[in-house]
Structures are given as C-alpha cells and as structure tokens.
Length: 287
Image (cartoon, rainbow, N blue to C red; front, side, top):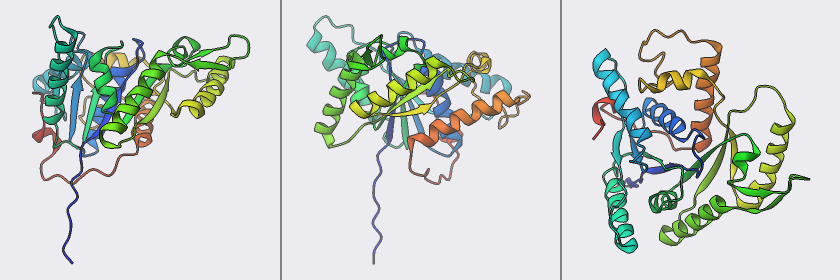
C-alpha cells in the first residue's frame, strides 16, 4: 500500500484584546520562543507595526544573540503596516493584500503567532478571522472583564456580551464561511493573585457563565513577576535563561513562571512538531 502525505497548513495563534496592558506581546514572545525550543518552525507577525512592541522585542533579541554570541532561536518575522490611503475601501484592500502576502510568506512554518493591536482596527479583524487559536489575555478584574461582557453590579450576572465578544463572533463567522474552520478561543487570566480573594472567585464564576454562553475556554495566565519586565529590554524570555547559559540563577519564582508558559503551550493543543534536519535557529531569522 502506498503512503499518502497529508499537507499540513500552519496553525495560526492570534493574541488579541482591545485593551492595552493586558500582556499580549509578552505572551506572544514566550509562545514564540517556547515553540521554537520545542522544535516547531515558527512565524511571527506584528499587526501593530506603529507601536511595534513585538518587532522591537525580536530586534533586541537578535542584537543580544549577535553581541553575546548566544544561540537564541529566532522566528521568521514580518510586520504589516496600516494603509495610508484616504479611501476606506482602498485602504482595506491594501491592508488585505499586505496581510495575505505576509501570511503566504510563512506557509512553510508549523505555527504563525500574530500579535494584534490593542484597538479595533481592520488589520486586527483580519488577524482574528485567520485564527485557529485565539488567546485573549485579561487582567483578573472586572475592569478588563468589561471588554467581554456587561456585568450586573449587584449580582455579577452577565447582562450581555460587549464589543470585543461581538467582534470575535463576527470573526468566527468569517472564518467558517471561508474554509469551514473553527476558532478555539482561550481567555488567559493574567496576574492572578497567589492568595484566594473574593474578587478572584467572583471573576472566575462570572467567566464560567460567560464561557458557556459565547464559547471559550479559560486558562491560568502569567503572574505579576518582575522577571518578565527585566528580560524584555534584552529580547529574552524565561525559556532562554537555562538553555542559553545566561548566568541568571533560576529562583522558585522563575521556575513557576516557566511552568506558566508551558501550561499555556499545552492548552493550545498543537500537533507534535515535525522533525527538522536543520535546527530552527539556522533556518529561520528575522526578515
């Protein structure tokens, strides 16, 4: 019996949220590096080229690797610029073309990680509609929860979904209409307090009710740890500390933070990485 080779398209992971400061770029960078170190061929796409948080993070990483002789894996990277055309229709057509071209250039990757702007833009909607997995980081409070749904202040019951949830619903419809694909939506609860608190319990209960109503999963995200901020300027992640021999002592907090990253990767439920004859560091670099 002859063997049949099944072509596998890149799994698209979108980091999306319409509120700044939720940890999208930190989560994106740790996903990228964690997946590279697991043997995946990874593409990285920054849809917020004006702020360029992900792009700057990766540029700093490349500089650190060059100046320190460190063996740091790098993804294939591209940034998609917003159109400056006056006509809305023309601008959206140009952005669609730029987005499609950038995605097509990463066709041989196993995974493509998209970092979306913290605002409702046409590029952000294009990114969301391309997702296989959508990861939405939120800080664990009702301030961030308001992005997902309106909550009754007296009993904390969900009144109705709000603008971001509606946008994801539209993205799901566009994705299904295009290729019958489905978006697995994960809400990532960041900055969870170590101790049990009433607000933490209330947010969790309300999230569970909303999850059943509009269809998402929740995972524990990243804690409030100084190490995430300390590594940013060097373009490093917790996945680099031991492997690259950077001379940073791994404390219990660092070990716990690495476990948070690993738990997020596991929650995405990717197929196993394909075996590579050439390590990702040599194959894929910044464009």
